[in-house]
Image 1 (tube, one colour):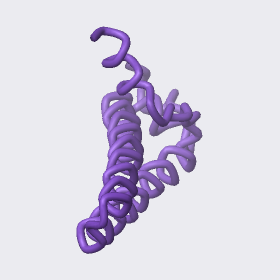
Image 2: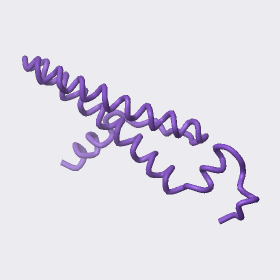
Image 3: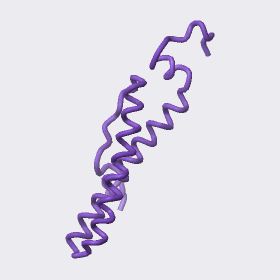
Image 4: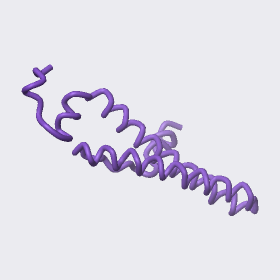
Length: 99
């Protein structure tokens, strides 16, 4: 760890001083984004199957997960952390490839 007087100022300081916190926020951003996609898919399927109330519920859940992901993204951006785009169906494709 660098001495306190040698730490950079501003967002760069946070990246150096709190790498574990930033890593946790990156994971949270990715998970919230994936859950947003998943709930959106559940909502579309429920609507397609005629379960409009359930579709509305999953659409609301998806909206809240998007808000969470956006908030994590904004914080990470203020800390000058590069956000990696989250693939929409990566895990699902990996599961299908295994079966």
